[in-house]
Length: 319
Ligand SMILES: [Zn+2]
Ligand SMILES: [Zn+2]
Image 1 (cartoon, rainbow, N blue to C red):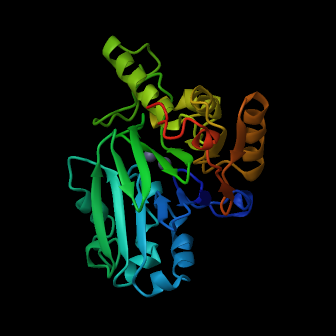
Image 2: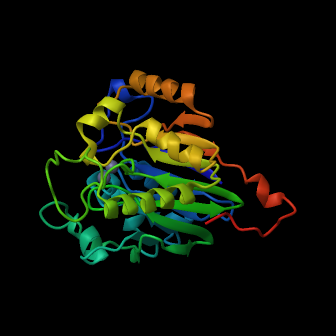
């Protein structure tokens, strides 16, 4: 399975000379299994160029294109490119959006992004057919012949991580999440929470352990784990309630899961290319697995797991 990064930045787009190498567009990753399914995770500004690339294919130009779009959560940096996704404006194309269930109807959440006076064309009026699928925290489903699983992450108002299995290879996408030391704001908004570093209560500790376990199991044996590493340690200590991790937190999970490669992802907007290089070098120095820093245009081939060809054929990954 091939993975291509179209946007690797967190929070907001930062084009400019200091981010040219890693790229300034917000979160968008494309997964390409052998069966040709177009699977995209998140619709940050990176999805605009991906849409243009898809429009070079006859199927998308001719209104027969199908996209499966997984959304980790609906914070701006994960959806702000969607109105600029060219396949939406061709009659006959089908865009299937999957996101976590909320109290508000999913279609209303996405359509509110393009309401007048914020955008000239409402998402409900586009030519393509758009469908919405509500996901629960532990959902498992098939998207274009590809197996997808979800788990809850530790992020304000809740994000979900995905695991995608195809061609014997597995990729996990874990963005955005804080480490599992303290529950980060669930349904309530609190601008600051001074007690966030206090030890969790017993019920909170159980919930955190369940959440961490879910993430480790999702990443179990993956050939690639793409993980939110927006913070450096001192930045995390200053803003623990923002819901983001450091490379150290990501490595702890990836190594516990026996995954073979970590991609640092969701780089902080203020991080220059040289600073991402330094963050990568620091992570590589302590890692027991391969570590890369996601960059716009980077393409990785994720190999099939060796177990898939072993005599214990049919054995399921530990779940
Ligand atoms: Zn984000
Ligand atoms: Zn977020």
